[in-house]
Image (cartoon, rainbow, N blue to C red; front, top):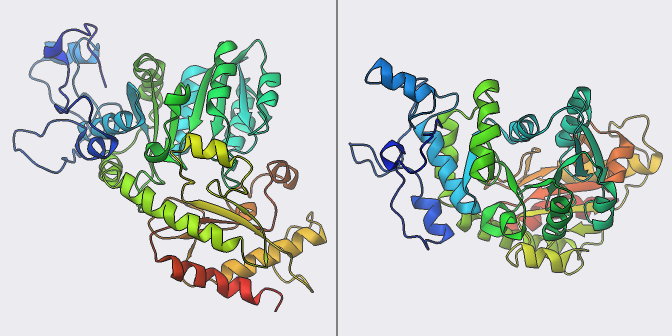
Amino acid sequence: MAKSDNQNDDKKRLPRKDLPPDARIETLAVREGLPPTQWGENSEALFLTSSFNHPDAATAAARFANEEEAFVYTRFTNPTTMMFERRLAALEGTEAAIATSSGMSAILLLVMGLLKSGDHIVCSQSVFGSTITLLQAQFGKFGVETTFVSQTDVGAWRSAVKPNTKLFFAETPSNPLTEVCDIAALAEIAHAAGALLAVDNCFCTPALQKPVDLGADLIIHSGTKYLDGQGRVLAGAICGPDAIVNGPLMTTLRGAGMTLAPFNAWVVLKGLETLSIRMAAQSANALQLAQWLEQQPQVDQVYYPGLPSHPQHALAMKQQNNCGGAVVSFTVKPAQGEVTVPAPAVLSDDAKRLRQAAFHVIDHTKLCSITSNLGDTKTLITHPSSTSHGRLSEDQRLAAGITQGMIRVAVGLEHIDDLTADLARGLDTLNA
């Protein structure tokens, strides 16, 4: 959004909805945004336009020069997109937000906007596979160095700091192991080093976790996931201080164009209205599913922060509003006999048997959707080693704790008894 140089000139500032200052997250999710147009629509308007008219040439010049706040060009200014940004910032408790075309483009914008050749990032080794590839392979080509460390070892983060460290990047809980990092501890280390802490809040969303309250500087979102909630569109966002969001990040987005389309912004904006309700219901389902999985003889281990058996259970309950979230991962015991499923030759025989067992369970589901997305109202199931983390080497996967026997379930809103019955079909016939 083009901004006025005079921050106190309200006549040049686009208005917000007049909401009580103490409005709670459920209210903000429904009401925050822009006032209605002169037509008085109750549902937020969708502005499908590439550009905006100006009353005269002088006004156009002032707006393009950022001397007056106005909508100029949809690559960086659009009312529907701004409504989504303002609503998400209100939910996260940050000064501002900037929308992007996907979650990965949000990370791209973050690094492009804030770092330069010679800078250094400390990043969890448990982040999404594409994040590892983007930071290591792509930004590495341009002289931005990344050190990957254990998600949960605070000492490893501290030891990885260099004089040129500018950014800490964490994803908590992680994908797919649901590892939880200590946000407050990482913020303290990052700030002592003069670096910023960015937290990917995709799994929890502000309905369950607010990293900024724990010291994080920037919040990353894949709006494709729980913010939309129904698997309809791609979207991303960065939430943070106004000086960063509407400073270097906006400057970079305006030139580079990793822009969120107005239609996608409108879809996610409407998805936010039910965010708290969905997250509560899906998390309740996930807890019951995780408890059930722990009782199954063919399940080797269950990864879910809401379980007392989770290594970071106490921390998760503190950071995540006493809720484990809606993603459950588990590993199955290896299949017996001959390996019949496709498997890379580099895998050991034991790894191939684990892969075969995981494929067996997934392929016997009738209700779950076999897809690598998450955050949908429908329950989604995937094999991370061959999908979301398939482009990593086996050594990289194992370093992150992702084995061939791991299955990730993003729990939806179906009845819990139907979900357990669906997984039981494969588990009960494994090695039968």
